[in-house]
Amino acid sequence: MTKILVTGGTGYIGSHTVVELQQAGYQVVIIDNLSNSNIKVLDGIYNITGIRPEFVQGDVTDIVTLRHLFETHRDIKGIINFAASKAVGESVQKPILYYRNNLVSLLNLLELMPEYGVKGIVFSSSCTVYGEPDVNPIDETAPIKPATSPYGNTKQISEEIITDTIHSGAPIKSIILRYFNPVGAHPSGEIGELPLGVPNNLIPYLTQTAAGIRERLTVFGDDYNTPDGSCIRDFIDVVDLAKAHVVAMQRMLDNEDTDPVEIFNLGTGHGLSVLELIDSFQRATGVNVPYVIGPRREGDIEQIWAIPDKANKVLGWVADTPIDQTMQNAWRWQCRITGR
Ligand code: UD1
Image (cartoon, rainbow, N blue to C red; front, side):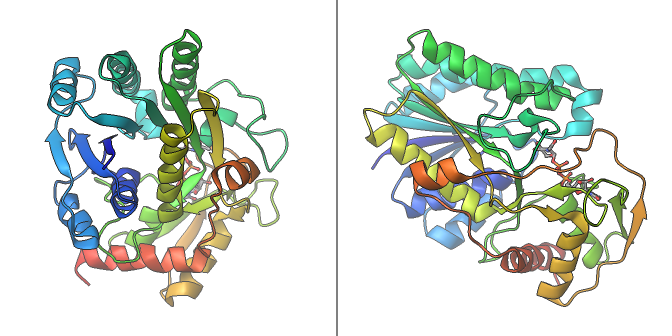
């Protein structure tokens, strides 16, 4: 069995990816410092797959811990790197934390990979690297715009670090995945997003409001230049997203003649507005979500959605879970964690 290291594997996207990797026959080792996740996620993974992944509690920014992990698991062939901080607003307040967490961890992995014979790394990037696009939808050749937050900057710099390292001749490969807006939860209701404190992102705020934990959702702006005035995003089901990591890993490890660095947009190809998403949640679940229109949120992009053709063709992957199903899964998960 091919062994894969998943950093940040108890997090939201990480845990869904561990499930898909195990179901595809990979052996998984997780390293996570549990800074934004819970050890119980391992039970959820076990309940779905019947396999408890090996778990190391540690920080990828700590090269001694990481070296020890590679010494213990000399047969790791690939890495999926989710271990990073991801709150845009917080990154403006705590830039050093963001640069350290997101960049030092990547540097450590890239430094140790050749030493321990690790062939490939799948890297979690974001559509945030495109900034506010001139036109939509966008493919991978769209220009990279100056980052508007330290978080966004870490994604741009990380992409450059990976590219420069591989162009220097390092004997490794990488697939960089630019996620659009991952939402939803595993259909089993066993794993999902577990935000600490008040959620920043739309869906956890929405499901918490539907559950009565928050009084009402605020829609940040209805005066954008879009059909209904609210922002438009490409909401992609987290299980679809997780599956893309498995095919990316297969491509990197099993194909000798692919480019050493490849970049893919991961989205559905459809833009949905914030108001449309609220509608879809209410339609799919029959649960009412009280909301008000508020002012715009600083730094928000008006509209962005993907051309996912490259991933569709080259990876043979498509994000095709209907949004209503994704909303039902998000709601099932919210009910589970609130004990409804
Ligand atoms: C952003 C980043 C993304 C990052 C993600 C994680 C961009 C384009 N995307 O996504 O790279 O990985 O954060 O934190 O920069 N909204 C409301 N009310 C709420 C919450 C959100 O109306 O209470 C709206 C926002 O204004 C936005 C949409 O919902 O239009 C999505 O917001 P959110 O879920 O926070 O994700 P992004 O900001 O798109």
